[in-house]
Amino acid sequence: MATSKSLINLEPVREQVRAKLLEKYDSTIYMNTSSVDIKVDVKEILEQYIEEKHLEEPKIYITTEAYVKLRKLVDDTTTEIGWYGTVTKMPGLESVFVIDDIIVYPQVVTGATCVQDDDRVFEFELSLSTDQVNRKRFHGHSHVNMGVTPSGVDEQFYQDILTQVDDYFIIMITNKSGNYYTRFYDMHNNILYTSIPVQVMLDDGIALEHWYDDATQDNLKEHTYTPPVKADADKKNFQGSIFDSPYDDYDYDPYESYADRYARYYESTKQEKRKPGRPKKGSRWYD
Image 1: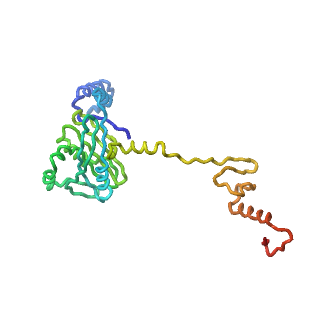
Image 2: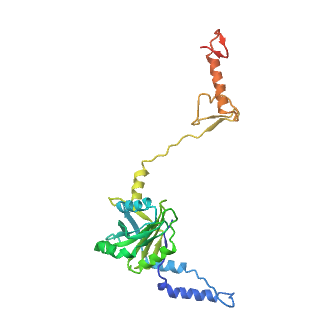
Image 3: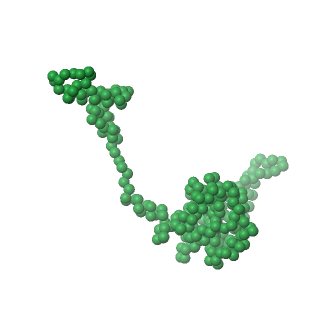
């Protein structure tokens, strides 16, 4: 799924939206006597605003250790479960972000919810190092066996988190089927990226996808075979099949069973082996 972009807050384009509303109002022919319902598509306004910023789309990676921890939490927990993660913004690569550790916080869970345990969260925050607090820019949780679309509770939780963030934040919802829903909130530039990919990064700094491409590109060759070719239309005899057998040269009815065809072939080979002058006993010939 391609990454989509929108604004976190429409305040920067307030005047453009107002102008669009007035334009739409002036072109409205029919108006109800008690109300005027006007819908305005501001997609072009948002696209232009984002384009004028000339921003490079963020690239998100997760280390193998963090990824293994994340999948272990999801795959082995029968209820929902949430976690935070520390993120490193790569020096000199302003658009590259690496999730490098997973931190499980106190929470009350059910099969459909995971709610932060407010009675223990203060103690949890105190247990974090200064580095962990400063780099806690990722939150994810499992939807167990359900879809990964955010719920109303999820959306409210994200809004609460964002009140404490002024640079960036990453969110993820996943499930046991390996589906993912991701967002990257660029608070500094007021842009929300949805369905942004998160790539696994190996210890040598190579993305797992790139390693796979390099490892398989020149080393995999698909097996091919010659498909059956109709050699004689009149006799309905097909040659070159992977099912070739010694008796393929014998004429056969296409509706004849495999067993009947083999029996005919077997009888013909017995006739060829028969030795003249030998006695016949019952229905068999003795060699």
